[in-house]
Length: 137
Ligand code: FEO
Image 1 (tube, helix red, strand yellow):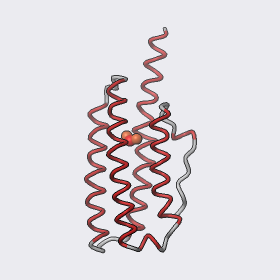
Image 2: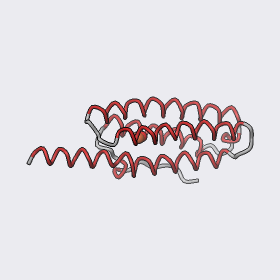
Image 3: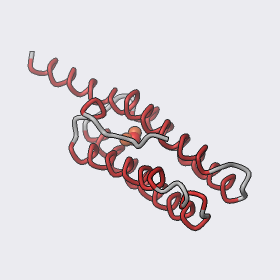
């Protein structure tokens, strides 16, 4: 599996949130870089704990930011965050019960993150830019 590489297309126009997204990439890359360790249940458990904790903190900060900028699609964005937390919790159980491989989970995590940032997160950046340029006119 390829490592996750952050590039400016992932920027959401807020430095703190960009840094948090990069941190998420780093957590996932740790496991991609250590494929053998990915099969140790202790390592998987550590990864999932870190990823879940990181996601909860990031979602809290991002939702506070969206509230501050009065983003109109905040509720829908919150729902996407909630669904992810349910999914990661279910996926964790499957991996821990050895009903699913860690590679599936890593692919899910990286796929979700890329898709979420590039589709939903980038949407609030564009909305903010448009709102700002409309305000200038
Ligand atoms: Fe950056 Fe909506 O998560």
